[in-house]
Image (cartoon, rainbow, N blue to C red; front, side):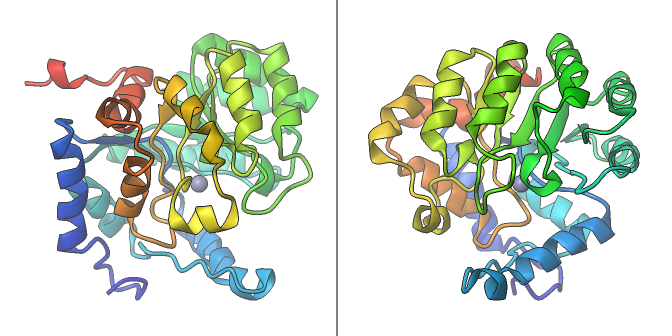
Length: 309
Ligand SMILES: [Zn+2]
């Protein structure tokens, strides 16, 4: 049963379907750059938010599919065959990021297949704790411009972007205006950051939904900009923010810089639906292999299929 909190998410049937997807492509599994693991009480608050969306938005229902305890969620993502995933966590206010980062250090230590993730907020001291996280081995950062309601071009963050660009540590940024616009969402503030830090390894979450084409422009302009697929192309998102058909060839052109992301476990449909949504774009198996494994493996220095025995 899904959504019951009973911890039986990821049915046997779905696990088989996910595994068939990557086995058919000859992959050793999936690399998912956008999954959420965070302190339990923070995650519960996130779920409360999605539970309350229906009344707030006049009908957008967002039932969390994988609502179970952390052990079960980890078991599920491993059964799917996800070789590497992240613990996207983010503060909604000042004074929280350092605490989240200390939780993430511990989580990464006890979860070797999780890419050690850290976060940040424009506040005094941010440069010091970001540096500390990098020194502790953080391999990816998450910045949530919509939830944090901050300007990514805030001057407090300027040295941070410089530091991350220099260290080559990617930052997954929710900077598009979906599912709802924020004060600083959209391509403008991000374009300012990139103008100052053109080598920043920025991963635009959700493919920049709904401003897909503006963010594709940025990726075409800056060679270190990547996009994650999180929720894009699914029936759910196509209803709210359809990807423009005419822009599909641009996805092919950026095939070495698009990364599988899913938003597991906070999705209102099955994990496999994201994979099928990518498949039905019709961009071919090589594209799928790069997006679902190769690009992430290269970015994070994981072994590629030919290197695995
Ligand atoms: Zn997310």
